[in-house]
Length: 191
Image (cartoon, rainbow, N blue to C red):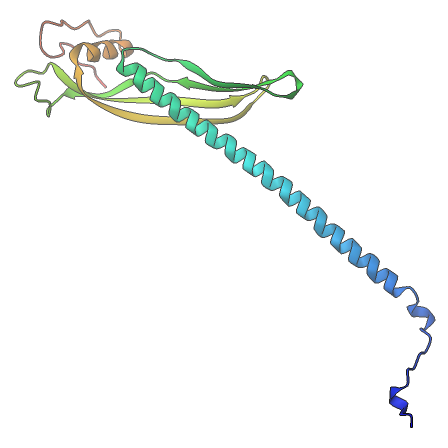
């Protein structure tokens, strides 16, 4: 015995529904294409952000290196102005250079070294606070791609009186040269 519900019924699709599966497939393909293209754009943007972050960190560490080189040069009595850390050829005949420009050590506070046991009643040794700047840049022949300015303060003690005198006169030419045989600075800076 046959049961009427178990018999397959096949009736033809109405004319209005013909090709609807094709349209759904095209719509799904369009949605997947849009999702794929948006992922490509996001990936490119993330790569650009990563490159900019790498460039910014290189410039920051370049400025820090320049600051440390300047400190070492100052401790030895020397002076650095500009240092080229790296030079890399890039396409189109251009060169990407990493340049650090260092500022002078500017004395912002000068006082006798009150905790230096070498003074013992004299003021031949001094404590001095310096401030200096370092500007690091990544530049091509046409533009600057990244830059970072780093300012730092250094406190040095004991500093010999002769070095204090030279650094004071560097910024104020009206200060007369100190007599090295007389303890203490005869002309104190007014800053």
